[in-house]
Length: 150
Image (cartoon, rainbow, N blue to C red; front, side):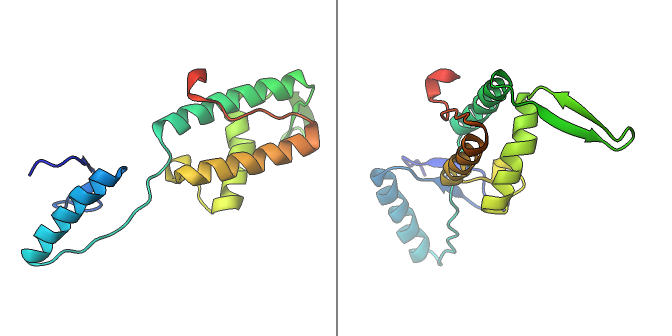
């Protein structure tokens, strides 16, 4: 069958999965459902989409921009090493922002360990919470990047 909806990776082998974004795609999918019901029934499992490719790119641009803004503002990252019991001031990097700021905020807000598991709405929720927390403590606020930034 040829439909105006995008087939995606099914949750289990030998199943069909469709990504539906528009009203016309919903109507097409209803036709598929009716056909399946007439031919023995169907089990439907709804799943919200995870973050988009654009959101992933924006997340990495955001981490880069926030690391620069924190460094430019004089807010060094302080790391304690167990071997030396010393204190070392380090500059923020996109990776340290993601691992030390984004990921703990994400875990606290969503319970999820991976950015690949975030829904599109959860990306916004994590950003808003992180931006609020960072800006309250450092006066540094970086807007979430728009498509043009990457």
